[in-house]
Image (tube, rainbow, N blue to C red):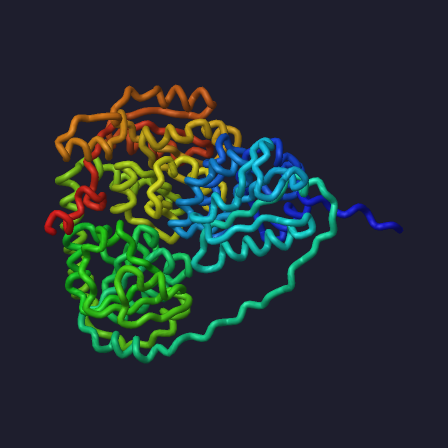
Length: 546
């Protein structure tokens, strides 16, 4: 019996994604990538069509952060690919493993070194992505597609994870060819480094502190860090990317954020800092105004990354979970005293929030009381989002997505689509009126896919953070104020249920509770103006004291 025809390149790609366990792909159709839509339709992969390529990138990011698995964005050639760059940059800065699959112009029309004017042509599409990706691949032959997909996915997921670009000439999608797989490579298990020096430093410390970053969360090191902290009687400060690493009731978890002076004092008082999975970025350290620790041990998969901001006395290169579990320390006394100290700090911080911004205190209290355990919060770059990112008690790993890697305005709503598509519970998006307008067209996606998302739009009539910056500097307001559109009417025009309230009082609490219990997507518009919290750069206390 004669063999059937070889699969097309599009089928090879769809089969490769299926073999990787891909559940969802976010994409926008274009004339060059239509065969991929056809091929994916024959699989069990859910293909969610969005209304802008940037949304595809952000949604893939939201999915990746909610699950730890590969997020996939499918876009078309030239401007379609270029439209993802803002989202890809955020994924790179926040180590979100996403794969951007973009078509390129037909290989038969390409001339090396010449831009001929083919529709959507660029001189080097892969090069556009080079500064903001871990790596890139452009398929040179149709039979390489399946193997290249696997290589690209492996690179995206390998610690430190991040975005990867994959370009495929559009004519390869309809070309039939037998797959050619690259030679299999077996990753060697890395041996643990000698831990004796680190254990001696820890044993000799009197006031140790653990600083845990996104690398610790992505490695699943929370339980190991919690046990180590209890033995050392060490407070644990988590970065924005590591929120939820320890449960809120863990006896060693310091209140967030470290930008509150009382929390920052834990760093100042420590005679040794154990940094796990972090690079000490500017946002967490108030642009490195935190003093160099007296002693610093760094655990990181990348020794150069660990040492670029605060030089360690000792670096342990490797997996955060494995290395933390392997550290042997004696149990110390004093856990009750540490719990008491942290409780006092938490009370001071809570009272300050209530005194400085009662509406923010109401927002935080409502989130603590109303949101179910399995809710994933996706915050945008907005004042309300800064309050949530800094002060909300995140109950578990991967339950907060916060774009503080690159700081991309407009992240919240499209990323919440990806988080909701992950099937891990309802997504609650906290966004401002300005950021929401970046992707408001994807209300159509929300309605079409019936994703379990509650969008909270805090409408302060403009760019509230920038307005604060101008007022603080004594400048006239320029470009920061506008008459907001009817967000409720806009959402309803797409078929999405919506309502509005003023402020974060009882009406907000009641409506949010109702919206969360719904099986449908919905939008809650809150008319309110909030003062920025201490974790925003204009209010950094170390800068003011300096």
